[in-house]
Amino acid sequence: CARRWFDEGQSNHLVNLGKYVSAMIAAGAKIAYERDRSVGWLSLLVITSSAATVYQLYWDFVKDWGLLQFNSRNPWLRNELMLRHKFIYYFSM
Image (cartoon, rainbow, N blue to C red):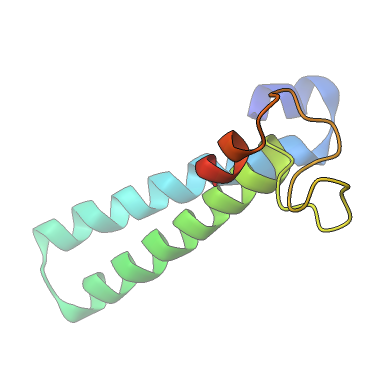
């Protein structure tokens, strides 16, 4: 993502990079919590893991897959679908 941003200059690539960085931060919080099982590290772990999960799910569903489009002719999906059966998209979500 960083390389694509550097090459293409599109800021969307930096936002996509944030998806991976958020996972690394959550993993770091997990490591820190394992070393010192305090309430502070547990709180940080829950917050960073929750934020990373929401961020990653949003990016995957909306940006990568083009799903959850409210104004589409296919409810909650994008207008142009690659697969014939819509239930596959709904099952994936």
